[in-house]
Length: 469
Image 1 (cartoon, rainbow, N blue to C red):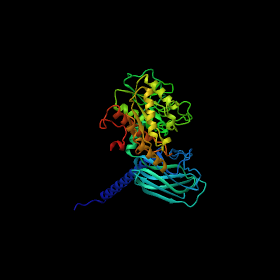
Image 2: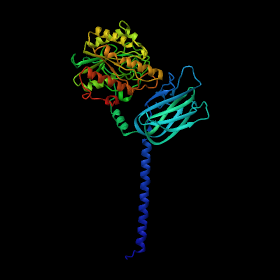
Image 3: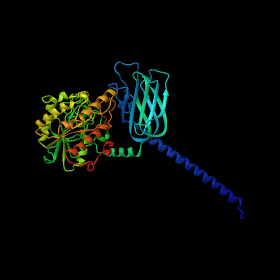
Image 4: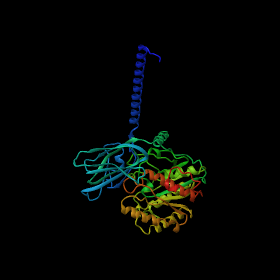
């Protein structure tokens, strides 16, 4: 056996200890770096995401976006006429992506809840309870409660406050976790979009009259669009033009409306000559209708004439009235530059229980075609969304069943499905995500009906489960 001198043994022991110490320090350093990176990646996944009220209504000045806007002075607050002593409040937030959730923080208006139940879901159908707290004290100070989740994967967050003291409200719903890789990629793509500048009137349309295809968008508030535009909706639509209030063309893009009571960037119905200036013209079907049409028809330009007005029954649209006259006048002004290819219609919230609605609509279609001089002008109507309370949903289902008979009564007409569309919390108005899909669905119908394309030929800009079935 080879002998080792004491000095060599000491050196080896010292070296071994130093190696162990260095290795330990490296492990600690790597752990600190990992922990720091993980903490840095944790964000509020609910910030500015879409929330809706399932039960409890909304006070007019305190809508669901107020609880996910990052502003502790704004909130969502429940509402029911008659001011009941208790009212259950249930809200749901769509994070947009399946993400890793670590904890949920709720800042409640005063102390109205006696119990809060927090649930998570990946599909919005099957829910898992991740928090359930009961509260004894009910006071006037705002209450902050936290619910550890432990890294569960979910896309939807649901908050339930059974039998809350009226009127329950949430200042801020914060969902802390790690964004999905897809969300990070999407945000990077949005950040790379060019900054909008004020649209300028164009001197001429770079398409022949035959190849400049015009569409008229009319109806009530869901055709006006009431949900705000997200960053991804703020872009100039390629080869598309919007008729402004002076009946002149400018690039189709969102922009604030001069004279409006809001300075928020508005969508493509902002130049409606019949809508009131106190209303927000948010994202309506026109934007994603246009993007889908131009993506599938590379040789045309597209002209948008949007002249919807909220809170209008079909009786307000009859021939001879202001709404009808302005729709026809503006369509004719646009037709000096191009070819009117179709009318897109969404209206019915004011006629949900009208059993004669389709007859009235067929009369309106005939009048529009006659006055615009196009006997077979395509007309595409949209179903009502199945949102709101049980009475509203039942009424909308009956309305949609009657609307489905339109193609049997009026030729060259079609109906677009509202399946899966959600409201933004007020039980009436389609949220921005729904408006994107709705616009695409209108476009798919137009591409088949007007351009003769098959489903297999149509390129979809957005994933839509209804279109993939």
